[in-house]
Structure formats: C-alpha cells, structure tokens
Length: 371
Image 1 (cartoon, rainbow, N blue to C red):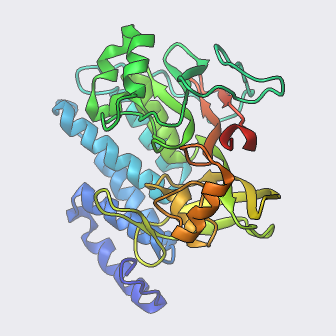
Image 2: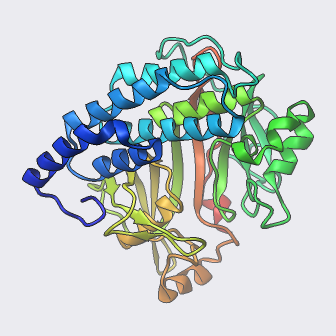
Image 3: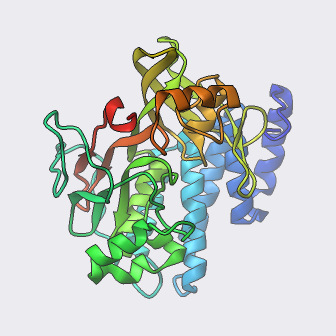
C-alpha cells in the first residue's frame, strides 16, 4: 500500500488483520519491510504493537552461537525496525529497551560477548562541549577546513570535522577520512579496517559537503551509537545556504525519496519515508542572487536527503550541480562559490559510554563557504 500510494482505512484494517495472523512466519527482513511500509502509510497502533511483540520474541530466541555475519545482519534488521517505529511515533519504551538490552548482553558479536557497557537510564545528565585541536577564527567559527580536525575525543568514540573534498570511506577519491583516523588512532585499526562496520563511522557526508562525523574506536561503541541513531538519540544539525527565499513558516519537509545505484535521489512520489526539520535564519542578497540561510535536522538519514528535499521545494543548495537546474547554477558562478556544497553539519549531540549527552560543535559562516 505504501509503495502504491494507497491510503484507504478499510483496506489497511483488513491488511493489518491478515498480517497479524501470519506474522510469525515472516523472515526478519520481511518484518523490516513491513515496519517501513507501515511507517510510510497511515500508522496503525495495532500493527506496530504486533511487529514489536514479534521482534521481541525473535530477540529472546536468538541463538548465541551464530556466526559473526549472522549476528551483524540480525542487529542491522533490529535497528532498522527500531528506526521505523521511532519515525512513525509508535516505538514503545519496552521494545527500545529490549533491543538495547540485547545489544548489551550479546556484545559486538558472538566472539566478544562483553562488548557493551551496562545499560544506563536514557536521561540527560549534562551537556558538554569541549572542542580540541581545532582551529577557529576570532568569532569562534570553524575556519581553514583543509584538513580533518578532532573536535571531541573520547576513549571509545570521537567527533571529527570532515573538510569538503574528503570522502568518509569507499576510496572513490584520494582524500579518505578512514585513512586519517587510522593514523590518528592506530590502536583502533581493527574496526577501522572492518568494512562490515563501515570502518567505524556511524554516518557519512557527501564528498563536496563538510561537517562533523561520529566515529567509533571499538565495536562496542559502534553498535551503541548505531542503536542511539535508530532510537533518535543522536541529533544531527546542519547549516545550509540555498537559492531563493525560503518561507519563514516552513518547518518541515516530509517527502519520500527514491534512488538507485549512483543516480540522483528523487524526492516526491514513491520511495522511503523521509523527514527534514528546518528553521529559517535569514534572507540575503548577494548581487542579484537571493539566498536563504537555514538550519536543518534530519529525522531520517537517506541518501542526499537534505539536498533532494530542498531541490524538491524549489530551493536547491548553493553549488549543488546534481540537484540545481542549469539556470540556477549560473548564479553559483556569479556568487564565486568555492568547489563545495553550501551544506555543513555543524552540531552533533550523542551519548557517551556512561549515557551522558555530549555535544560537538563546529559552526560555519556564509563567508567560509563563499569566496
């Protein structure tokens, strides 16, 4: 129904009834598709309750003696279902704690059963911001983004600043953030070389973009932060300069996105549910070009989500050659933009190993991205 765009209450009620009767026969991967399909359509309390109850049963019956690849696949499916329930606003506290407790008990894999720290209450015990080893200008803004920088360094995890032109990992360009962290923390090379765990990185940024990236130094920290990300406890905030004057009343973009291989992401119509929250910070004129400064926070982490969402509403990111029309790109030439997107992840909020919220910040000004 979600894929076909069907939104009929009577059909959904009947489907929910049929699905509930056959749910124990579903593979876990099918439950993932079911959860995201439900999140894309009209949320059903009963359906989400049934999904979470069935997955909780699978958690209790999961074999401890499985292969590492099986364990990782199982965890990825759990986190995807957790994320879908969170996006739909139907995640129960009991289900969230069941998933977190499972990770706590099992560890990173069957060979490392004591990977996780004891589970802590999900409360804020203080906000800490201790930037380290980072160059700043007189106004406290991030400057000189030519090399990666360590913003917040903790024993088992860190927040680092990726400059534009650098790739997180994948070896498509010469400058690799993965190689940089291997040099910086050689004692953690085992996870940095593990492609199954994304070389320790919790998320990515596009090559022409800049901003903060979370990296885990241990498998323990990696799965801990992946669980935080799925449960909505990691907050990712961006500064974006885009074309045109965004309406001050626009607070969110809730549009599905679709992509295949390396093609651009298509926003609108069918696809995966995606939600971007935004707030207008100001309107500017630079020559004949109208520019909006906005801050964004993403509730989902889809490929090119912010870029495709803003292009969908007619305000593409400045210097985004993939999503801006040719006529719009002419303004980028007159703006004398540098070879980068005007998109920067400036703040990350996450929990450390003691479940205390930490905050890493690296603000940027329009002058830092426009020459």
